[in-house]
Length: 289
Image (cartoon, rainbow, N blue to C red):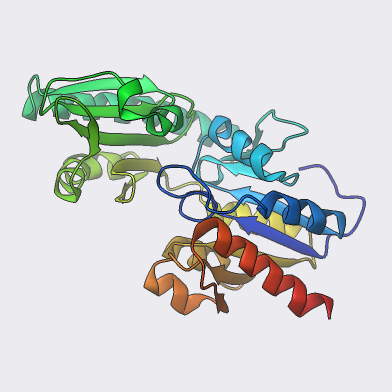
């Protein structure tokens, strides 16, 4: 994050999944990028703070014309559209440990699957965003009952594995029960190696990342770098709200979790992209009068 030459008074941090995009990675409003560009020209800085890999964040930044920091993989590093080389937010030794444990985690999960699910599963190292964006007719067809584990191959330090089940023609999100069972089976091993396992029920995915980095720690770094700036967070999850505590102000889209809504100073009546646009218009009216 290069030293800013012009004081930035307002920084807007946006979540991606469930905030800018729905569970199929689609928008419900096409005019948001123009509003973001207009507000950036008026001195606002827009940034993304996501658990996604950098390769999965960049297309979103391009789509919405976001020129500020792109914080990736749960706060491990950042980049930008102008400079896409990753800049670490954790010490090199810590990052190296994360990278090692990430590979060991995946191997451990494969061992668990081989022990308990025999030949019922397949593992795919793939571009998961592209996979989930495809129509069912464009995907590989697997025998009925096959559990498909789609691991995001872009990730350097964290894990995201989408769990799907084939009905013989199409891939469907696995049940919450199956995701819970898998997470429970590997959580202790992960904890012993300083990794945390969480469930992403909306996408039926298993997420794992180091305890030594977080989106909040990355936000603290941003706040220190742009000292005195007003920091605004827009999201849909409880974690998005908790991340902003004592640092900035949280706004929620309409599809946000109820606990997240309770922490918001303003809740849009619109979901995802429309909700983000509504919140930005609300912020602009409140601060520009």
